[in-house]
Amino acid sequence: MPILEVTGIQKSFEGTQVLTDIHFSLEKGQVLSLIGSSGSGKTTLLRCLNFLEQPDNGIIRVNGETLFDAKDPSTQKAEEIRRKRLHFGLVFQSFNLFPQYTAKENVMLAKKLLMQEQPNFKARKKEIFKEIEAEAVSLLTQMGLKDRMDNYPHQLSGGQCQRVAIARALALKPDILCFDEPTSALDPELTGEVLKVIKRLAEQNTTMIIVTHEMAFARDVSDQVIFMDEGRILEQGTPKQVFGNPKEERTRQFLNRFTEG
Amino acid sequence: MELFLEQLPIVLKALNVGFIQTLKLFFITLIGAIPLGLVISFGSMSKFKPLNWLVKMFVAVIRGTPLMIQLLIVYFFPGLVLGNPIWGSSESGRFLAASTAFILNYTCYFSEIYRGGIQSVPLGQQEAGLVLGMTKRQIFFKVTLLQMIKRIIPPMSNEVITLVKDTSLSRIIALQEIIWAGQSFMKGSQGISGAIWPLFFTAIYYLIFNGILTILLAQLENRLNYFR
Ligand SMILES: Nc1ncnc2c1ncn2[C@@H]1O[C@H](COP(=O)(O)OP(=O)(O)OP(=O)(O)O)[C@@H](O)[C@H]1O
Ligand SMILES: [Mg+2]
Image 1 (spheres, rainbow over the protein chains, first blue to last red):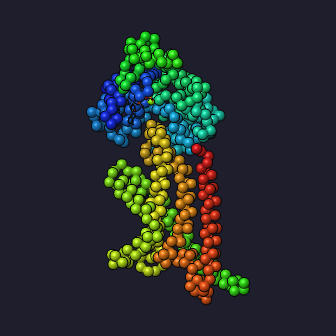
Image 2: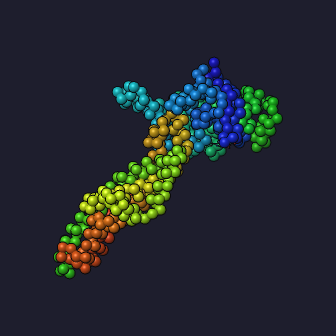
Image 3: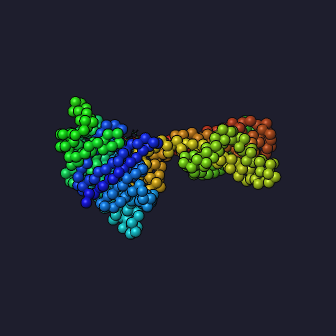
């Protein structure tokens, strides 16, 4: 059974159709790259998966459980959406770190708040916070930020900020981690360090959906590639198929723009 | 000179009493308007149109008219128009009326500052919190609030300094604050009359108090300089 099944997602903003009939599925441990020109709906699709936008139509299933069905209001209860979001993580283009917290505090905050809802929280508070801190330290170390943990976001480079943001998303152990152009706000020399971290996550079989304009990276790291155009999935397949032998003329034109540089 | 030295203790004592009243009005206005301003700012950002419209109108009227008029209306309206002088004519009644008018007025100014502060925190902060499974409430208190406070401290400082000076407007309904106390020696009080110098002394009280406030507020601003 696929970890994620997306069926017939539609979304329009004020009458303009932004997503049309989006269908795809993703197996556990696989990496899906979303490519396509500006305005093709990539960000909107990720936002729908993370419940930041509500699709007008369609179904989102994770591990066989229907998280969202536009036709079934019982899947849209506001108080359940917060829990459902936790199946997904989202790393933003602009990091969106919390400026008043250190790198480590950024990673710990949400987990701490979540654990407070546990019934035995009061009794085990100290123990729980120790565990959360140890996890944050371990995640940041994996991100190569061992000696940056007590720095505030404004004291970090863009690449370091984005790695903190990745650790922050991982701290909640999402089933599927989404990236929206994680390197687009970075100077070229900082792009590599972030891509390296994502590649390592792929090697550790983290299930990921990555919106990116880094074609070489997408080709290298993905199991599946989707090319979107004007809100539709125009082509999908393995990186070999989509990059090596695109069926559609639009895909070819799009890819040519990148190879010609 | 001898006369001055003789009168000085009498004047200072009267000014101190007036200044206590000034301070009381100052602090009660802050205690009331700081939280109420937040309530009003939520109203002015409400997506419920009728509420939003009503709150915005109210804020526009209060900010568009002089505090002096508001003081007079709050104090005299119940007695003269409704035939029910709720405030009475005692000093404590006048103080209540003045507090009401000041809180009303400053709530509206603060609410606009808060609104600017809240709206200046990027939407991405809220979205990051949502995606991390935080509730709206947690996002407000753990993420947005401190960033908002940092942004509103400079404009709030200006308002607070203005408030110190505005308290003197309550003289219009004969609240016995420091200006009233200083002025009484012009008309004649405790054997001193025709003296204008006590009024100059009231200015010194304002200067010193505002100086202290300026230093404290600058320290608060510095405290939040650890992040950007
Ligand atoms: N909140 C919104 N209100 C109205 N229109 C929107 C909104 N969000 C996105 N759109 C529109 O939807 C379309 C798809 O936008 P989206 O951001 O998903 O594209 P994208 O593929 O991520 O583009 P880019 O590569 O530039 O990030 C665009 O035409 C955009 O203007
Ligand atoms: Mg986008």
